[in-house]
Length: 110
Image 1 (cartoon, rainbow, N blue to C red):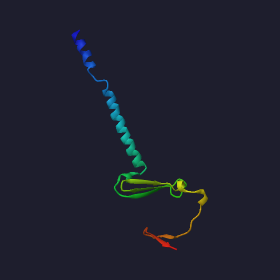
Image 2: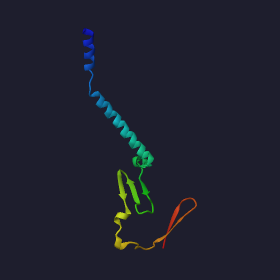
Image 3: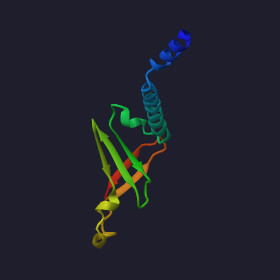
Image 4: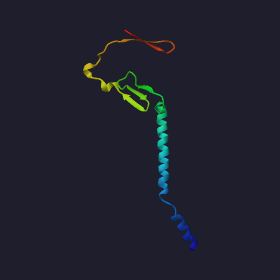
């Protein structure tokens, strides 16, 4: 009888909240793994570097975005948001750009 009583007491000493702590740890590991997978999938590793960069998403389309990073500041520009329908297709030609065989681009103003 005494032995049975001591076994019940040993089970009562375990903390039922320890399971919740383990679930929190698993959720945090899953969240970090998901963030790393998304960053590597969309090639956004430049966001974490110290270098300044400019990235164009969907070039030449209606939903084009220009993302620039200067130091710690990240700027996002969407040309379609700034477009005024009354001024559509207005502008003037300011020059010609040529791309050389080695990849350099030369701008010649008119």
